Length: 169
Image 1 (cartoon, rainbow, N blue to C red):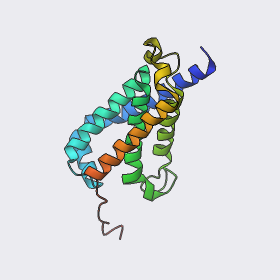
Image 2: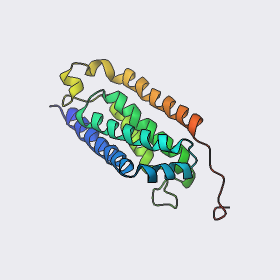
Image 3: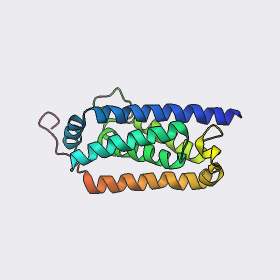
């Protein structure tokens, strides 16, 4: 394998594990996750909690095994953009700031974009199926862009910035 293939394998697996575990954490307590979604301004909170868990687990598995990699990367980008817009953007860059800044979610989104553009690499099911060359480069970037569109649709449909609480006012 070429160094780029090894690099993509490492990047895919790490991003996949991170988002998979995030999804498993959501799935462990769907009621708690739904309550949290509602508290940050999402309607249909139970649906959001279930969708979040399913998408994050699915994206994680697809990234780890390298199947439909740009589609999985688009899911990662979409998930991280929703988190960025609805929660983290107002808190500044650094994650250690109160309310958690956006450094982590934007970093994962950029990993998703890089993976979508570069492709899964040779150590992937995409490669074994011979679809690597059809899904990377500008096609991968376009698929990643579709992730942003789906995130915008989710936000427009289900999210409304919550009113400030007395403590925040």
